[in-house]
Image (cartoon, rainbow, N blue to C red):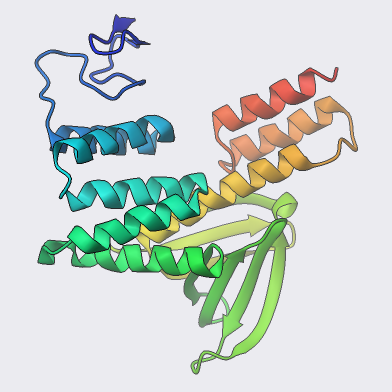
Length: 253
């Protein structure tokens, strides 16, 4: 273990940055805005969102006009389900993102705000039915609505979180395809913006995890752990979430 010279927290020997405060551990590493943003993205990918937020906010402290930092904080709060904070930082991003290079991120930020205002949703192209589709995350499942070319509702279906077996998002340069396999079938939604796809998947997994934790214990703790292990093996929940579920039910044995 290596100790952070800034806060004293111990991180693994291979770590270049502190997992607690986000500052460089190696004195040869610079303490620049770009370093904090890159480091924050790494923590975000590792689902260490609180540490990622600390990195992005330190970048803002160094440069309050850095648009990328506001966007990154907004997306992180979106993943955490703190939508008011997400909107606040995405709006700030819009204020400072005057560089033409931010055109793609501005579109992504706009879509995120639409998702928040509508109640976490995602639009794309249903490849099996060959029509536009809208997915909305509800408390106990995903509502899938199909749209006509004129935007009219032409049908819907609800997929319970408890019925979902696996979730994958295959992303390209700008767009990707979301695939959800559940008891009774599968759906493939293409033409999904890659940033929105990743965030939507993260929120589905969080909803599944929260849904599992809120379920009444209707079977043995061992059965619940086995169910959680299947979700882990399918990639629906993370290892940390599996450990949380396991610890919860083992305490009842």
